[in-house]
Amino acid sequence: QVQLVESGGGLVQAGGSLRLSCAASGTIFNINTMGWYRQAPGKQRELVAVITSGGSTNYTDSVKGRFTISRGNAKNTVYLQMNSLKPEDTAVYYCNGAYAYWGQGTQVTVSS
Image (cartoon, rainbow, N blue to C red; front, side, top):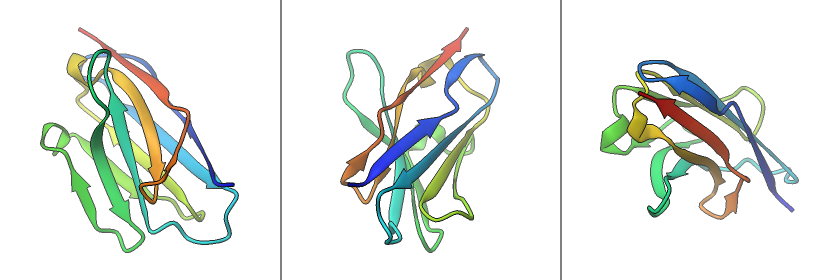
């Protein structure tokens, strides 16, 4: 059974930075596409960024130029570097693998 474990969330002031990490276990196969989603209170879960094993990336417009998704050297790891954070980035951030597997989520809170 594939499990994804996130870490790195927390409380930061507007303009600050955070780095989220996610590691998958339970599979010997490389997960081609990994990504990050987020869900703010009262809103639907939305895509933040995805990356393929080949390094192709896609970002939602609101984070372009501020967030960077990357793959780790270890198999099935993914990171999200978040800079210039805004209060509207406040949400629970979820790691996703292959559009099928989900982590438990990590809270990111940006104070104004």
